[in-house]
Image (cartoon, rainbow, N blue to C red; front, side):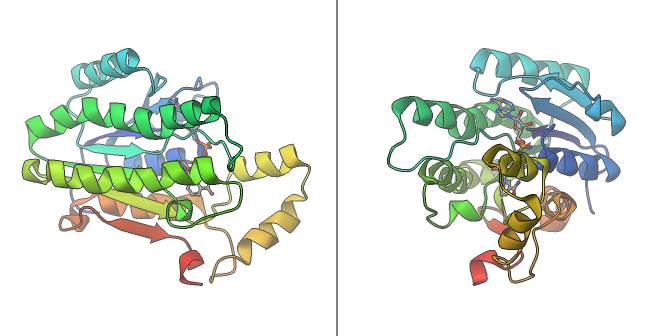
Amino acid sequence: MKGLKNQIAVVTGGLGDLGFAIASRLSEEGCSVVLLDVAPDTEAKASSIGARYWQVDISNEGAVTAVCAAIAEELGKVSILVNAAACFIFKGVDASAEDWERINAVNICGTSLITKYIVPQMQEIGKGSIINISSVSGFIGQANFATYNATKFALRGLAKCWAQDLAPFGIRVNTLCPGYIYTRAFIDSCEKLGLDIEAEDRRAAAMHLLGRQGRPEEVAAAAAFLASDDASFITGSDLLVDGGYLAK
Ligand SMILES: NC(=O)c1ccc[n+]([C@@H]2O[C@H](COP(=O)([O-])OP(=O)(O)OC[C@H]3O[C@@H](n4cnc5c(N)ncnc54)[C@H](O)[C@@H]3O)[C@@H](O)[C@H]2O)c1
């Protein structure tokens, strides 16, 4: 894809299945990639794709400031930011103040903080692409998903506001909205709830026109496109990678 070679790309939640698939694809396309995650990189995933890794909680403003400065100093200025980190809390009207604080701190505030400290680097080089990873859950209501879906709607709202703020600086901001993707998180949640993984996979598959869950590489391909100059006239937009989930 056009314009990705030698760009510096930051992927938050980079140790998660989707963040890692996006980081891998950007690395293959010639970017210098940085993975940011609150979890330690115990499996040396970053070095396996030639990327750098910093452990940081994106909801901690001091830590985010320090990491963004370190990236600029050690690698150069960032032109691609993929906001994939997420806290998963699924509650309905019963959500507590603590639930809201925890999920908002990462999904809304944390995403906003990392963006705040990367944007000046993009402004200095006069270009940038920011991609918020929302979800089909950012478009619809789902029972007992109020906490999660509210933040996924918010990520779309943030992207549309930032697209307006940042267009004069040559920075594009878009949202990528996956359907159900077959990931470790999916398997873990089946195991946690004592559900049969194959039966759950079939149930999830039936929700999509294409009759299956998506693959992380399919989300990564769309992220690479939005990051690239092939998407040079796309900003403030939502790109669905949902196998037709929302078309049903
Ligand atoms: N997997 C799916 O089916 C699916 C579908 C639609 C949207 N999404 C979205 O894609 C993104 C990635 O999902 P995933 O399935 O890879 O989940 P995941 O849990 O595997 O990855 C999320 C990563 O974010 C990190 N993280 C959490 N809190 C953090 C913090 N405070 N600071 C830094 N990092 C933090 C976690 O450690 C984890 O590695 C999320 O935004 C999710 O909402 C996923």
